[in-house]
Length: 96
Image (tube, rainbow, N blue to C red; front, top):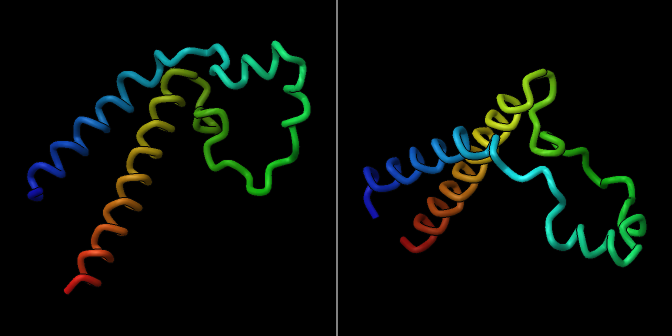
């Protein structure tokens, strides 16, 4: 895969993160819903080992919920791209 395709994929992912993430469902996901319905949701509530950098997919300090979610999506997309790209570069170097 060439550099152009990688950048196009990143651009699409960033656009999705920025434009679609504010429309994410506020309702609990399937696993959380089952835990609530079965009465064991509280058992999974423990203090986190690490503090989330962007808790609840909402960037702290931004009052507008949609903007906060979009920015959180952008930061998450860029972070995962950076990690994935870095791993790919390391693997490629190792093969040489």
